[in-house]
Length: 488
Ligand SMILES: Cc1cc2nc3c(=O)[nH]c(=O)nc-3n(C[C@H](O)[C@H](O)[C@H](O)COP(=O)(O)OP(=O)(O)OC[C@H]3O[C@@H](n4cnc5c(N)ncnc54)[C@H](O)[C@@H]3O)c2cc1C
Ligand code: SF4
Image 1 (tube, rainbow, N blue to C red):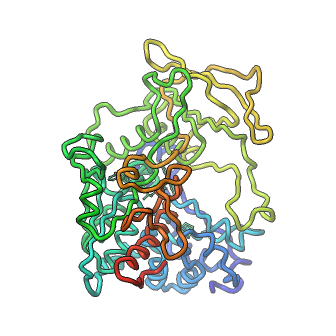
Image 2: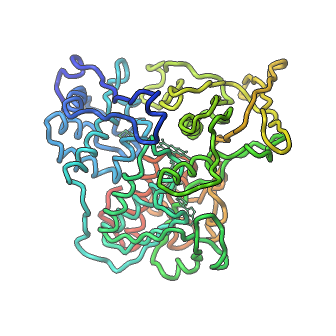
Image 3: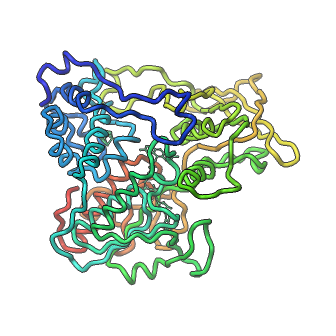
């Protein structure tokens, strides 16, 4: 364990942030990770409480008490090995995971949780700095070929596990760069893209082949389907050329807001806006970029994607940024004895909110207003919730100026076409249907076709995608070889 009395003597240390007024001038990461001695002290607070709820609260089941203890004892390399034994990409989760482990930490019951995420961040950053992270080549090759469709965290985790089990893995990605939403969606100021590039290089050295700008779909091969895909490959081809196919295409169908004025110029989905800034940051020229400079911006949707739109709009130099949430404002603090060790509903103020934003709760949009086809404003109304039903509050309609509206209300399902093209059954939410328990976990109804990540579970988190990718890899490996040594 950490220091026996550490949790009594030492306080939680938060990671530092570059001040808001300077960080909004750039798109680089601004979180200042813990120094070695700070991480060491933070790890000393771990109580080794006997039943590590944190380990269960973490979707990849990171062995948190063990790496805390190793950091406390300054055995960083061993801590890194422990972390990598359950998580292929701790530099992603150490930056952008909401840390359900900390909600579940026993110390969180009546004190501040151990800063588990900040320790994870410190371990992996030290690992890269010291040169401890390198390719892990398989002891032997199996001669089996696996296709992975989609290069988000689910596809990447699966591909790495399968390559390490000795299979020949090819990742097909319709975008021009690898990474899924890590690359195009999550802003660079939350996670710089060099972290993905390093892992891609590691995986290439481990034998993974990446094919970008290739859309897997049943379309004529010369169809230009997205801005970036240059080629298509049919499901039939993949099933013929590979011994197994894993679908990890994410959940990309955004929820729309079909109110009057939706077709006005200036109303966009968040996922039209955010990836463009990622591309510009990567050095691409985008003359038609959707920009927020000097505009009144209204972000509809109170979640993480909305918060990312707030941060990006402020970096563009928006005149004002307002974020709408349909639900009432949650309490500032959770009732810990009621909710621990589960993820609590409480007001979450992100670093993007701190950079400047008016947040409105229990508010709905009735209409987008415009002039000559261009958005000029928005008509809203306050709502209240009774017995789970939403009702407008009479007399609360108001008109707000708006030059740019960003719709960030979540994703309803994967884009159906790829699932349909493979003949894969869908669940009642439109996701690829497949169980996660039992002998046939991650199997779909189509022989040798598997599904994982947001494409299977619906819109979720990076850490869940990594878990599903790892578990699906084990299922695929067992299907190909009769048994698997890969961890679940
Ligand atoms: C703006 C935004 C911010 C987020 N922030 C966070 C956060 O801070 N923390 C967190 O934990 N989670 C966050 N999430 C959620 C998280 O990014 C996702 O849950 C996670 O990326 C899902 O991983 P995945 O591998 O299943 O799918 P994705 O990351 O969506 O990757 C799927 C990939 O498959 C490709 N693809 C799809 N269909 C095809 C096809 N037919 N042929 C070829 N390629 C195809 C897509 O182009 C995409 O690259 C955020 C999501 C969004 C939208
Ligand atoms: S991956 Fe997320 S839940 Fe798991 S230990 Fe890291 S921060 Fe906590």
